[in-house]
Image (cartoon, rainbow, N blue to C red; front, side, top):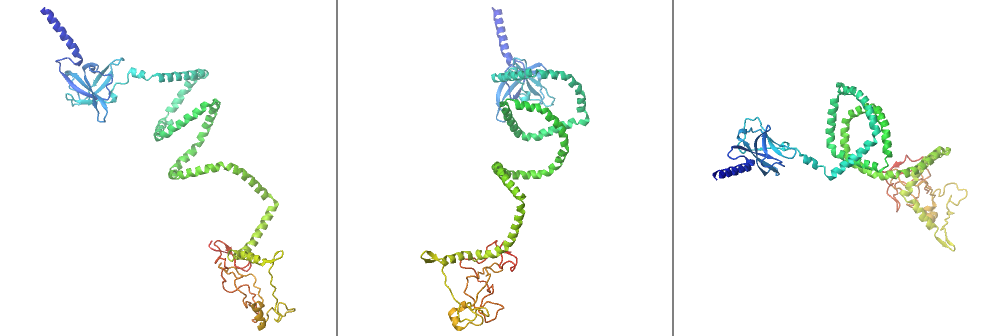
Amino acid sequence: MFIGAVTTLVVIAAVLLAYSANKGLPFIPTFEMKVDTPNASRLVVGNEVREGGFRIGQVAKIDPVRTDGGGTAAQLTLKLDKSASPVPRDSTIRIRPRSALGLKYVELIRGKSDKELAEGEVITADNSNVVPPELDDFFAIFDDKTRQNVERVLDYFGTALAGRGRSLNQTLAATPKLFGDLPPVMRNLAAPNTQLPRMIKELEDASRIAAPLSDTLAKGFTGMADTFAALSIDDGQPLRDTIERSPGTLAEGIFSLPLTRPFLTRLAEISPALRASAAELRVSLPAVNRALAAGIPVLKRTPPFNRKLEKTLAALRDLAKSPTTDITLRGLTITTHTLNPTLQYIAPHQTVCDYFNYWWTNLADHLAEEDATGTSQRIQAKFAPLAQKNSMGSIGAAGPANGGAVDPITHALMGDAAAYHGQDYPHAIDSSGNADCESGQRGYPTRLAQGFPEGLNIATDSRTPGDQGPTYKGRAKVPKGETFSAEPAGISPPAVVVNP
């Protein structure tokens, strides 16, 4: 009975020891350290800690902790055999797969620092120390949608490959020749004169320069997708024609592009000078865009206008070819030279003195005498005084009318009307363009006749001294911008422009 009790006690102790083995054997001294890792997925308590492939401890605890950035990480509590300590401070931890079934272990990579980790001290493992994706994670990417797309792609490529069987046969037949020609090409590329490293460096610079334009390039690819979508709607014949003609186009490009090198070299030389213009263009583009926006609808209306203009220009061409055109133009030139001074003299009589309107007013009054059939002219006949010597009614007069002194009886009956008044070309303005409306502004001057005997009461001089001013509805000066001449052509100086 005693032996049975001892046996039962030993079995119970063995079971307890086996149950506690996952947390370390009791009564065995250990070294504890902690590891903060961003991901402890599929790592469980009891997983081994190894160094160089040998077990040196196990994972005793896994706890969630808050990182400094506000995120969540996992903290591993490792219990190492005492023989594995001390642990250098620059040691690192890596979580590695133990098998393809998902079992993990923690690998300790011992550092070389002279400083040691203290008992319970925490070290940090980044994402590079976390186990790579598992096999089931890899297979998890092949969901239903992905499998359908892969099947569709394989179908497309399989069909394309089957449809290019002849081309593949030709490619395989040409491959030996390709490999025969390839060594000299490779030697040429490897030669120092080829400067292949420089080309790769320039490509790197080009990529670096194009990096800020990634959004624009992405939009370009989006536009290309729209273009290819539009091409796919078509029956494909235009695209086939384009592909068929591409070799000839490329051959022409191989011939033509080297000829552009001098132009490109010159362009590279003037590019620095264009930087200021390019900067100014950025400022001017909004105005240019507005001008283009305004010009587009105008240009749309240009073709019908040009068609009408074509007919007009054709008629103008026919007119220019006509033999009478030159004669007409010469006559028009002469008429203009003749008419211009006349208009310069006549115009102020209307623009300043308003004589044309006055004439029509007086004409209306002249034809306003009512009679049995309507109206008739108002006429008052005035006869020359018979007693006046050399009067207008005299036959065989020996001198001008009113020659000598006017007798008191005639002067009392006729007054100054008995004198002869014939002032030709009355003034409308003076030489400075000021109003001098002489006609209709006064009665008859008793005498205004230079070179005639003093006794004659006549007015024959064209000009009355001084400016008579404007008429009642006239202006004080020639209008702004009007050319004028105070005297008829041949008498006056050249025309003057007022306030040009």
